[in-house]
Image 1: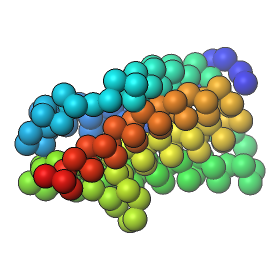
Image 2: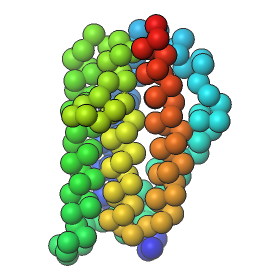
Image 3: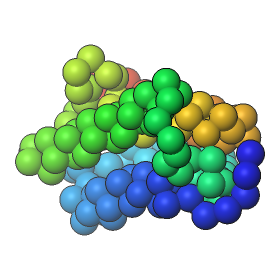
Image 4: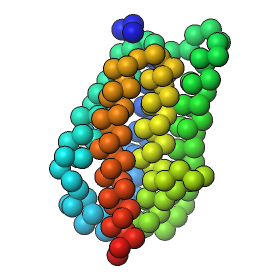
Length: 158
């Protein structure tokens, strides 16, 4: 693991943050009601994972492009998942913006808004051969995907 700026990490974070910033103005109806019920442990894991993953994505140059090898397919897979994440958001922004739209699946990926970026960052960790990033992504994934699954279950029960 080599310390240094990662422009690939910056690109991934931009792909993650831009739709989330737009979402702050286009939240689903009744979102606050669901957010008030979030599990505090999962929320803590999510926040911790967000800080760790965001920081590590930027400070390890292991994620930057290098000469093509078979290992490069991990990076290709990560970018494809992030592109699918962008497609998920486009679909959400064109929808009626209900809670069911927010926690929908895409191409069989459940709660795509949570699962796709977590999976993409895990593939990025594999590409960079960075176990610290992988551990941070696991922390993020348990919290973030867990919260989304709880919200989806609440939506289905309503």
